[in-house]
Length: 399
Image (cartoon, rainbow, N blue to C red; front, side, top):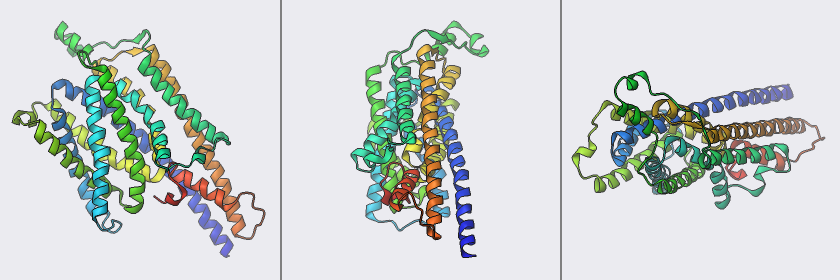
């Protein structure tokens, strides 16, 4: 009877895993659509002339007001006591993941375009892995290049990066040029010209914009990697996000009070500016932060980072419709490479999970007296840890 009960319990646990993985995939897809809208909305806000620093201050205040109540009431029991060490860690997470990340992004976007800004973010998966290796959070054998799942994940990541590079470096002939909406056509030729120039960074420093966006990607990768060990010590996701957001508000306020001394810069002058600030704070910071930190906790930083290429495709479509950006042959080729790369990575993770399930069956049989065990417990332990936190050593598997 004990064996039957144990087998039933194990079967129930195995049934939970596919459901959670499906939730993770759906959450990451929704997250990419939300972030894609943010690229377009942010560029529209910059075109309206809103102050970059004021935009970031208001964005994070809205996010903090949204997240803090949920964190306070929902995580009372699981939230550890606050101490100076945690405060320092939250401050540093805010400095990297909010102040540097968002600041560099907006400066880069102001000098480039939404599609380019999104495309260059596809370097985040590779940067995340390299940074984890540099910080000794990713053992060298974690890709398991001696197995087909490891090869697929490596080739998929490489394909994503190559696809993003093609989008960035090769324009090619125009495949599709959007027409202005009827409302714009009925106004004046100047309005039509404005529609076609909204997505461009004419008169800006494109090279400097690229440097800012690279800084943004480095900050984002560092944030993804450094969040995981913090969550191990402070396993309250919403509280971590709220505290990080709180310190981000303080840091941006300190900078803005020095740079933006005119009171007019702090005023919202139009409904469009108000909508952009609200979308940035509510969707791109509040909801997106909560969803992303849950996905990092359950799927690991690589799982989160590898979904980034989907965002580029959505941004290209949204920017074409809303900002008049054209589709070029290079963008189509890059998009195909990105889709193939994402498919390879997800297929590799599927094969990895399948192998882990076989290990679980063998391990369960061995625990009930079967001595025909073909895989050691040490190997099974490593496989389990790579599924839960692909960039972290085995000791951090329960983050």
